[in-house]
Image 1 (cartoon, helix red, strand yellow):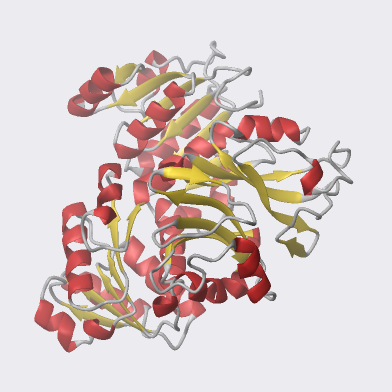
Image 2 (image 1 turned 60 degrees about the vertical axis):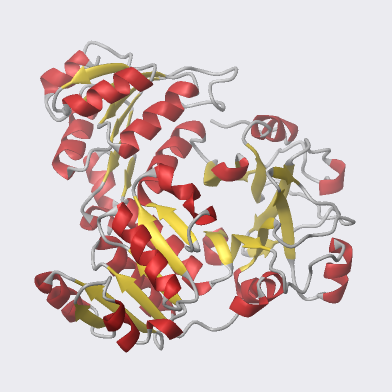
Amino acid sequence: MSYIWFRVKGGIALNIVIVGAGEVGYNVAKDLSTDGHDIIVVEESEERAIRVENDLDVIVVRGNGARPSVLKKAGITAESENVSLLIACTNKDEVNLMACWIAKRMGVEHVIARAVGLEFTDSEEWAKDLGIDMLISPERSVAKEMEELLEVRGALHAVEIAGGKAGIYVFRIAEDSKIKNIPLFEVRKRNPNLITLIVSVQREGRNFVPKAGDTLLAGDICYSMCYRNQVHQLESLFQPSLSKKMKRVFIIGAGKIGFQTAKRLIRRSPELRICIVEEDKAKSERIASELPEVLVICGDGADSELLLSEGVDNADGFVAATEQDETNLMLAVLGKTLGASKSIAVVKRSNYLGMTEHIPVDSIVNRNQSLAQAIIRYVRYPGSSRVITLFEEISSEALELTLSDTSPVAGKTLMDLHMPAGSVIGLIERGEEVLIPTGKTELQGGDKIVLFSSMETMPLAIEGLGEKIE
């Protein structure tokens, strides 16, 4: 059975079992039940089980999801073919892997597992050997996003696309912006070598796709696609004061995210000076041995004298990545107050994401949301199509879609497509070539496109291209 269509509109409602009702499982159950799927949640904690029962329109089965007798209560048996998908997202690898293994043996066609241990996602062979369709570790994707946020300091959000050749970058128009109060066609005229496309603008709570004659204002939040090697040129137009080479970064917390972030930064910029502050002595010693290029200090990340003595007031980036949400928010505020150019807090709870409007922190990254979104994308957009990212603050998403060789839009220019309002094709991959298109760009069969649209309009945009998700 293939998953077809978007949010069950005109398609098939799936029977889905979710093992684990923590922050990830709860949000996945909430979104997929809202989409119209029939959800059964398996949870061992009575407190979490009660929360799900009270808040969501789902069935709850109490017990350990790694036990066949418990999964049987959720409808997973050799005799039954009702369950289409099992999602195991507890914080225990042995539970997640065993639940998926049992489900596969019982005939469940598709299984997804969260991997707490990074070694399970070091190679795709683990998922293949275990028969798991999707084995994902949120720490890797979060570290990748943090790398981009630090590298492009003016960006509020950054997502690599096209294998790193291009990206979607979110910038706020600064007061000293070089493109403030200038029509977009004039911006293009003044910067002929910059290839970029602004796919959406958020202004005073309203979102719109800008036209050539529109003028950007200070405070506007712009969602832009551009080539990766031109992002700093783009950044200099939106945030001139932040567009400079990164030299020093502080990371508080040497857990998986802190370690992965430091590792990625070193790989990209070997000359970068990185300081990791970690209270646990054993962990500090281990990280120091594994990352000899990094200065590792065993100490309190909230010690302002310690931070200042190491030069935090001249830091280009400050990442708070301990295990406690509230601690990370406080530390990110401290880092910003002490003079760090950009501060980022890592959290697990989604209700903290809007706090950048109220506290002096540049970005808040939710690692659980990253995992939950990846799972939801798999269900909503299976097969050859995949959602690159969701922008919940503007109810939009970017979908990667490959046009069939016999696509009805092959040979047509973008201006001839009559795309629904609120949707735009922002990038085309054609063989080894990556294109940021214009209205005169002609589509070809086999093109891999990035379609940006509101969540509600996306099905219409896909229909307009003569494609279907399957």
